[in-house]
Length: 109
Image (cartoon, rainbow, N blue to C red; front, side, top):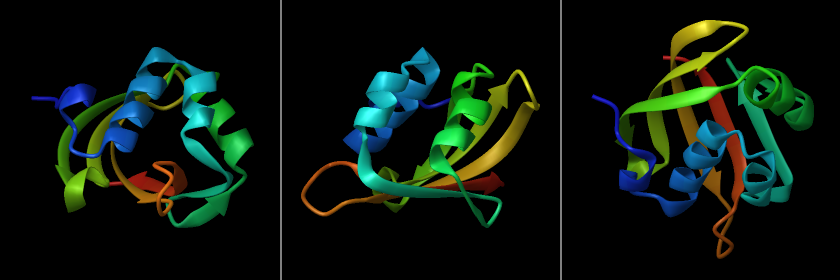
């Protein structure tokens, strides 16, 4: 049973999942620090290019299965038009004091 984004423990991560699922790129980008970074399967990627390809141009959607580390680590059934559905792990680093994401890492779970 998926966990609704509003029920996630970390409000910033909750907003991230909601923005992905709503395909709201403006809201998504507003959650990131100006110098945010990310990695996919252990390799750092170009953030803007990756989010366009893997989320916004391909109708990405996150169904959260579990959360840990205060809501900053998720196991997600992630699907998009490019890859179909896969089980993925997501980890988020929240910038001190700002409530913004400075880094996220994803990969196969």
